[in-house]
Length: 140
Figure 1 (cartoon, rainbow, N blue to C red):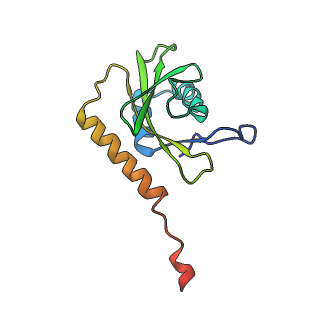
Figure 2 (cartoon, rainbow, N blue to C red; figure 1 turned 90 degrees about the horizontal axis):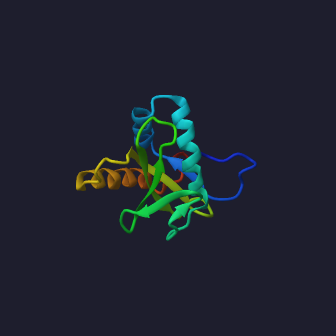
């Protein structure tokens, strides 16, 4: 699943969402309108660079050296606000890829168990993207 790009959006990086984060999103925002509005905010990550305190008009902060979060204040009344946990992967895109790993309520504590889940989701993303081998059928 990808927030992807259109032909008109050829600048910036690709922003992709992992399946578990997609499921988080559906639990927190069951209506399509809410998910579409959050997608617009997440797409601002295309121009985010490590060390930036914001992506467009949305605040970002570092969770630790590998993980970051986008703090989306809810102007549409569905929740108090959302935190999008993401990481930066340098490959395979030329400018790297931003992976959305988790979506949670703003007031939800970021416990050590939650960090273990986010680290596990990143390991799955890396395995599925970096761990791909050439097609074994080509060798036959």
